[in-house]
Length: 370
Image 1 (cartoon, rainbow, N blue to C red):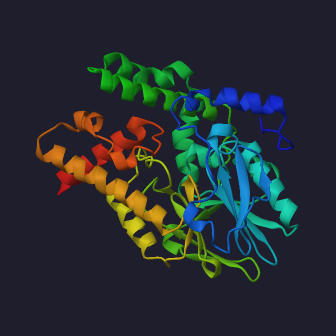
Image 2: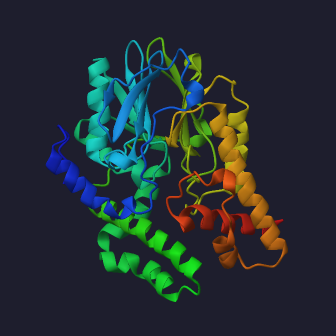
């Protein structure tokens, strides 16, 4: 069934909150400002959002460029960040979000600003929190753009969850909790179980809708002329194997998807995530103009300080992993023994295993490959 896109009643909000209840316990649910303090005086940034629904707000961040910023302390209608770019002739929507109501919220906000047609909506990658709302676009005949392999990855990862009993999907993770050999390992396994439970609940209530304009990374970058406002779509390695960014060069604005997390540890769970590739991508972002505005997949809109912070997180993960690797600590144990340094204590961690654990084990694999 396709979600009803119109309006957000109290009943709808409570229903969605029940879907995502498993996330509230560990998703770092805290109020979130839309932009970093470093951008507060940037003339491209509007002083106030044009719409604030609580769970997300939409703010102008450049001429024709808008950012949709989620606040998960107030609901999970959108969950990730997105936005839209408006030209003289057309607009491009960015992200399908986690529910069709989230995509509808963004589309309704676009219509408050302009009536130019939406030439398409782009998923920056295939993950559930960026694509489970795609059905809204499908129902409204909006062409859905994505990495050439995004559709297959959606089907391969989420169709089996829809076909299986919930208990089957959670059995392996529940066994990890039961078999944990220490309180710390159990605590981490329980955080992963909560995260997986939330994903399963979301996916089971979703109509999977696949991109119908696949973008071949070998043919990128692609410049799209919206009419006096060109945007450039590029592909970079790191988070999912399907990662795309959207650049608005004339405004020095970049929508990064989950190649950037601001205010939290990055999620590294994907089988095609590459830590070395991701760090190379972030090095490229650091080479962008010093005045670039980044819209991360999660967290506040930021400048180059946000890139520096996530690079520092990866540096620390790599440094601790290498020390434990050289000391002969097994990868599984090393994932639990990683210590969050004091300077990162304020950063959220969605799930220990899906963020820290997978990062450590992937770094171990890269060290072994050397």
